[in-house]
Length: 120
Image (cartoon, rainbow, N blue to C red; front, side):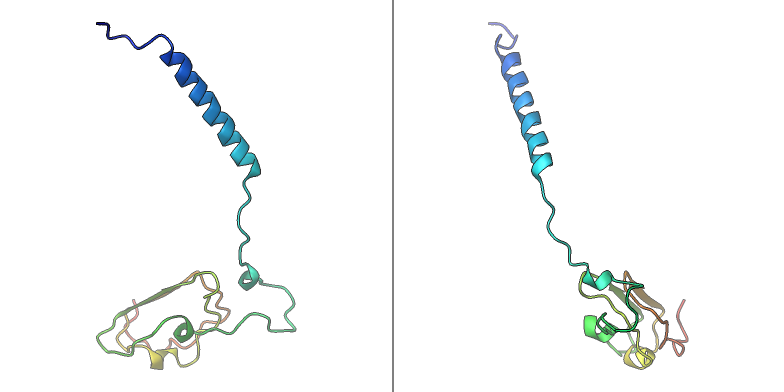
């Protein structure tokens, strides 16, 4: 009994590889990405109208004023971008916050955090 592969195995592997390469190229040429919801990213456009929605942190996530809370992180997602922090943000959150993180949002003015005495 021989340990060598059948004579036509190499030809079959080459045929499968070529076929897969052709299918991959064909799929890459015809792939169409889905439409992206990018209306919320409009910056610097027509400033005469406020076309961007006004969205506060409490609109995007439930915020706790529990004194035990020391960390608040809200990461912006498509359609859920915070646009205003709100002048009373420090009254809505725990006074003991050490970390306040708003990442990937469209905030135009930093406000409402002056009374957080423990931010690091």
